[in-house]
Length: 192
Image (cartoon, rainbow, N blue to C red):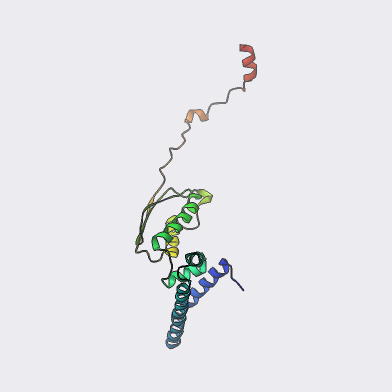
């Protein structure tokens, strides 16, 4: 049975939860053995993935398909086997998050992007009901950590949107009564 991406994400989250719970076990020896077992299995699967890529050899299209699969791509990252350099992965992540943030009134500008460094500038302030669930800076950091955890430096600069001039209504206009409605069509006929 094949998992969809949602099920894979859910299972990855559960695995991370279980792994972090090992440290809380009361029996230190059992926790150490469980951790060693997991590390051994991860190393085994990493070697298997490396061999799959080696068997693909020069078949770049198949390697690309593997890397583009969300779950397999994540495993390739974990085992330092991903075919794309960090900068390329970071660029794709920033392009995706740029579109998401633009829908919330925040502009993302990439000021520097290498295989070691990502620097971005966020301009704008999330507006009203369209404000994202998490701060835009965290959205960018999470996207980069997921796509390119091997970046050495991530810097997110924020600049709020310039304050709009408030619409000022003269106080005396609040107390004026509107004049009678005029029939502009009748005025045009009388002037003709």
